[in-house]
Amino acid sequence: MREAAHAHADVKELREAGRLADAAELAKDKQEILRIRTRLNRAQSDLRKINRRIDVMRRSDQPAGLKRQQIDRLRAIKNQIQRALGTKVIEARAS
Image (tube, rainbow, N blue to C red; front, side, top):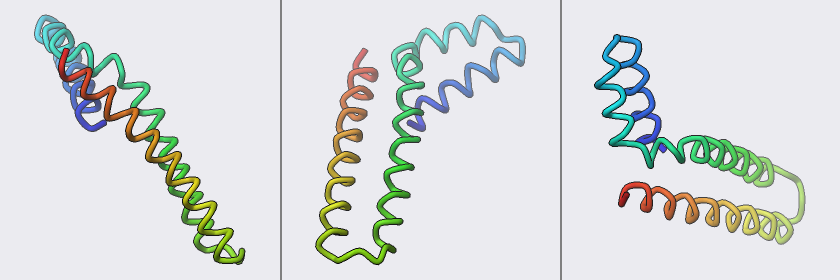
């Protein structure tokens, strides 16, 4: 996620500095990671929301067994998102 954000910021900075050729070259070099940047940002937002839900569940007054069940379910969703992202990033780096 950071890699995509850095690449985007670098391209934007070069464009703003008037170095359009350098910006275009960097964008071409980082094309695959820049292509998935919006998906990464969306996933990061989803992960933040899941973490907040986990924290709320931990602080809730519900029975321990129910809390554990809900937290486990949220962690499973979180792990699934992270695995999918990892695969996308690896594919983007390989290209």
